[in-house]
Length: 43
Image 1 (spheres, rainbow, N blue to C red):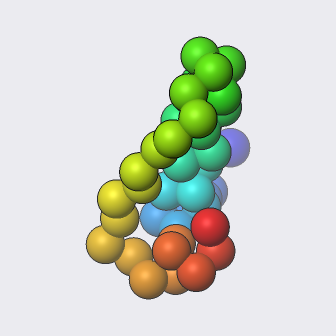
Image 2 (tube, rainbow, N blue to C red; image 1 turned 45 degrees about the vertical axis):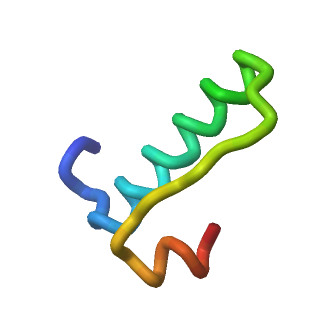
């Protein structure tokens, strides 16, 4: 199914995967940078 996702979905999955890694490392603070207002509103 690679290639069937929008840029929006890909960016959200990237953020989610990053948050999972940080959670597993027990980090309690994170800063997310994006240029998409839709992503900011979704998160």
